[in-house]
Image (tube, rainbow, N blue to C red; front, side, top):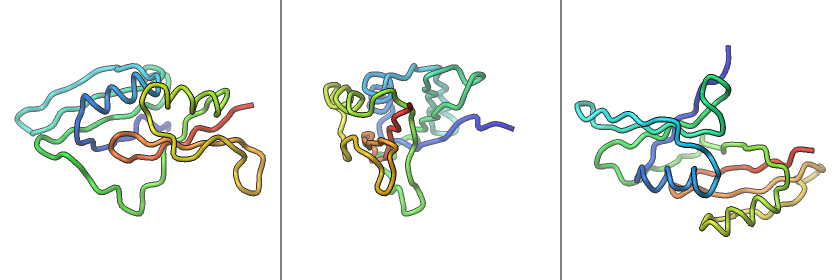
Length: 127
């Protein structure tokens, strides 16, 4: 078994595609429009889905926002340098919600950014 993708419901598909491709550096892998069912999907990732997990962005026609609820945590992305990644996100118009620094009680360097729909993304510095 392996994880294929994580689905996020988004309020504006193009805004989310722009964030994940232009700010986070992912590639738009494919889109599928299902007018009869009232939704459009966009798959984004750093690799093709056969090679690793990707994100499925789901836009349900007419729904502009969602409540993320208390059960959602975050998406984690490995980076070489968390501080540099924060600067790159910020320079591309993204929002950093926790600057790079050691995790409380540990030495792993992390940072957090947030996507346009409020989903948290943890940047974890890989050694």
